[in-house]
Image 1 (cartoon, rainbow, N blue to C red):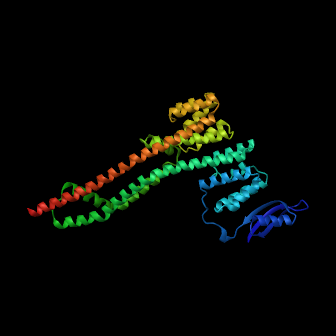
Image 2: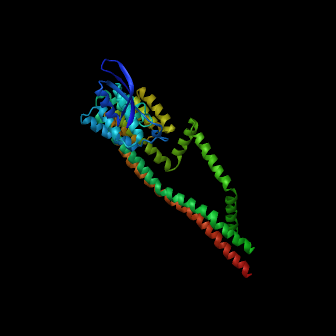
Image 3: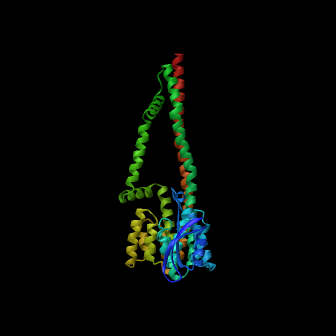
Length: 401
């Protein structure tokens, strides 16, 4: 049994508050309606044991499924409040359950769905809330919710592709680091003891190797501490606008990597802008939200200038091309959309085109990274092998003499 506090209006039109015991919200409402209450607002009261130490994180996949289900319920004719309640009852994530109850309470107070979503900015991005607000004005909430679900699905698929492309190179790099650490910590010190017992003069490669090993063994704590300090300083720097701008510029200038990142940002920008424009959001607002969603200060600052130029009557394609961040193909496709009145369609086509280009860039990046890691690892292992073998031959030669 759960305990709920309620605010309601009784049969005489007077405000009433109190607590009620029930298995769930539906039963609590049924009991209150049976007592001639109406305009009921319920809040679940939790005991100390029910409070969560850590809130469950709401994943993007869960928002995608919520959007699709909510659109299907509305299209089937189910009232919005009932649809929200059903989704909250069926959710396994306690954070989603609590969030849907808050949204339901807001809807019962006469608020719009977009106003209720505004209270959860970490779960629903700004472009999502803006599209829902426009859909409420046009009366196409069911269609737009399905479109949002498709957009989130495509976004998740793009993120999965990036993650999948980085798994194998990441594993290779991790194994290389582990191999070097094991050799420096366990293998080479034993060889050092062996060589010291022979009192022989060692070749230069062997002396270099043993010097590096001694340095790592004696100063590992300093190296580890220095790495931690560098990471902390970098995290503090990138929290400032100047640091973020520097980081974003450096990332975009890295060969191959920078171009891949740029294509991913162009694809995301076109995708979000197309979704918002299709939902009826004003283009200046849609452009601002789309640029903010990129989280790259280089792009965001340039797109702010694009918005200013667009408000002065220059259109969208020409200022975009002038930034130097958007490929010529993207600018030409958007220009065709402006001239033919099919901007939304052309933005969607551009997003799909650069989604394919991004796949190619990721494969190319992976193909370059894998041999680079293998070559570096091979050089290190080869140097160790040469140092040890040359020491063996040198020692044996000195013993024979």
